[in-house]
Length: 172
Image (cartoon, rainbow, N blue to C red; front, side, top):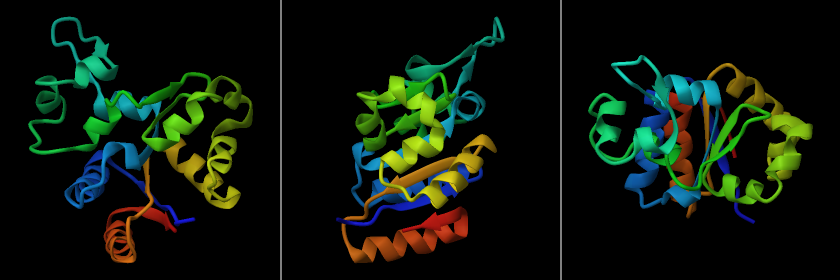
């Protein structure tokens, strides 16, 4: 079994850079795990209706032409794409937004998963408990946690080196 590389990014910009590197190397959204609190998604990935001041959350605010405006005109693929992807799973009882393969794994059991909390979800997905607890604290602090199973050892080294400059709690 290949190792997953994970890291906790303090802001959207650093998470975007890591995500863009993955995409540039040919990784698809369905290979990239993303985890954040619903509050973080609202803060960094939502669009505000200028007339009413209401936050327009979710896929509709981030689709198509709205993506450029929602991220301040950023060019190219950004993490907003994965945040808006159909594979995104919101777990209201925990206030979480999960995207990528982790969302697919949890989709069948997400309704019962709230009892175990975020740590339980991550441990169930194969992340060691000690690391899962760290990531739970990070998510509560507003960080974005990314994970990927690198295709080869060269990618592992490259991503790990880059993430250690951009993120905290980088593990493999």
